[in-house]
Length: 396
Ligand SMILES: Cc1cc2nc3c(=O)[nH]c(=O)nc-3n(C[C@H](O)[C@H](O)[C@H](O)COP(=O)(O)OP(=O)(O)OC[C@H]3O[C@@H](n4cnc5c(N)ncnc54)[C@H](O)[C@@H]3O)c2cc1C
Image 1 (spheres, helix red, strand yellow):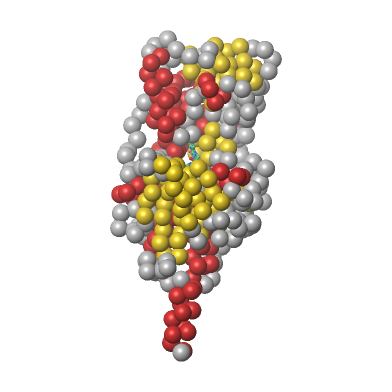
Image 2: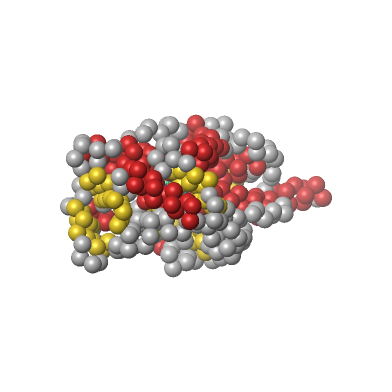
């Protein structure tokens, strides 16, 4: 019987890692199944653009994995039982249970609501494609007179607010954040950011903690009420509760606890990568949820899985955090590098050249994920079990 590898999630970490595994592991010994809720690879980095009205390229996973021997299962994962080694999925045909020998958990994250009342019922977000499409439809409905309130002061809030303001110049866009808008940026980058918000006519409410969202807007801790026709919740990401309910060891925030090689510390046949995993980077700080972290942790997870299953040495991949690339609409941006302690460096690339760098990074990531086997070594390693068997056969 083949060794069953099941990969949950085909986003930046999962699609890349599954392709890599398919390229390196022999299909006579290993069977790789990828489960994803959507039939397409979704460019999450561009969902604020989708919400603002831009079109994203269609990237069917069936094409992404064509010729790889990967079995694609389009279904929603509803549960994992790490002790029984099973995954429960639902699709149009109903509920099904998949058994695995090795699991790679890369289900990513969603918008964090921080338990603020009304967010789930009334707020929009851009952390997943269906949600971004709902916001897009709402913005289209608003026509020329609407008020949009974005909650959050970090990367996604900044990108969402500027993209919406640029694509819908007639809408009145505001942003409320509990801290300072882009307060972590270096001085030059922050000045550039505030100038861009000014140019787009986005009203900024700093030091404003939103405590409730309603159908008519949001209210802050100090009693201020913000009227809005669309409230966009962009106050960080949270992982899906599936890992915490699975019996796997998780951190207080639900991210899977792994060793340096991305193996679950409680169930060594389970590996995790991307937003779902908690791991310290080279700088000693937890790796941020980002596309780059998904790439680094995915590369390490692939190397570890191959090593564990074939008996080969496991190479340590670097886990760096170098900075943030932030789009401010389609023609402006900031590329902020950070130092070895994750603090912003004083200078930053700004303006149109930063926007070009950002577009190039986004396009290159999508290109690489859409061709997950491109340029990868085609070793087709046999399993440690089958190599041991063949040695036994040879010496018998
Ligand atoms: C609007 C926006 C802009 C961003 N911009 C940047 C940026 O500029 N730079 C950057 O580094 N990061 C950015 N990020 C963060 C980045 O997108 C994530 O860190 C990255 O996608 C994490 O990769 P992942 O593979 O862990 O998760 P994902 O890419 O989210 O992949 C998870 C996959 O799992 C699937 N899935 C989820 N739940 C289930 C389920 N129950 N059943 C089946 N399938 C499921 C999803 O459909 C998806 O395909 C941005 C995020 C957003 C939302």
